[in-house]
Image 1 (tube, rainbow, N blue to C red):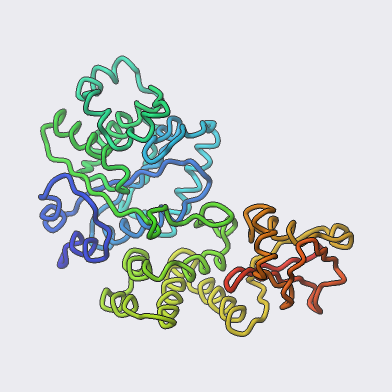
Image 2 (image 1 turned 30 degrees about the horizontal axis):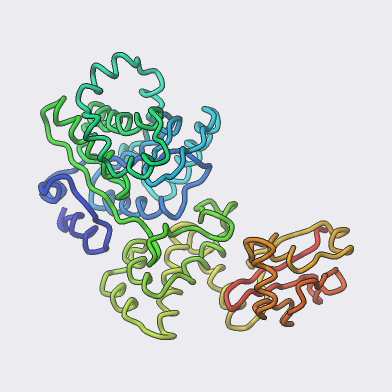
Length: 410
């Protein structure tokens, strides 16, 4: 391995913390088996997972072996890290379905052929654990005093941390120990919110096996205010095209804050760093060129070149030429409903252009809404199929960047 992947990850902005300084030497000297965990809390991966997937790809490209650990067992509990409330409990069947979907999606990015990567599921060892045996084998190595100082529990202490969730760190640490036994996994990687849990596993292996184990954490994708990136009006930014269309995915990155463009180009694309720095240095209106590159490159990685090109063409046709596109986000109503009429506020809320009716009313009163290129200031205005254009659609525009078309079901 010529270039040390540690240096690549550092230059591109991934690295936050490491448990031991030897991590860099280890990654430069030998092929390392490492793991990243994915709790199966939904039926699709998100933009937050995308960053860790990119790190996995860099590691695999450098000759290291990833283990994608699906959390069929840990999802039964739920990680309290960064959560103010206890995660809702999912059924075992739902979790198994979600884990299968994660495996399918991860296969688009990671090469699992010929042992180049491994997919494992911690349900295989966690769900049949003997509790007394776990306490004897693992519990004796954890100090409750120390666990309570962990960042992942602090937010929950004020509102009440259940014993149910308190076990999560022990379960995740057990995972690392088990993967170390099964596959000689030496390194756990994850978001920086996993730091305390990762340390738990590293120390468990070192105590029980008397051999080295390491941890490395990545930067979390956040806005300049420190809010997790990947949240849209509709909720999470999903990697599943049926939940977030390639066009919406493209638009998300096309519209991010100027100050985040260079960081996201480094983390979420494979562009050479000289290009990342050059694009990130653009100012004023020119930064939009960098955003278009970011949106295109990320969409290409997640959805393929054809979908990226379609999203780019759709965006340009809407923003530059003011024309509609088949790839524009669309909401369809039964024809009978539209013939009776829909008020504009309802349309804004249904299309997620407004969070609620009061926000919709405010947007209209402030002159921020147009329908088929006509500015509408009457929030009680009702639209019917008679208002549709010659192509049979209503195009609602919020500000400069929010577009949505309304159509009648055939």
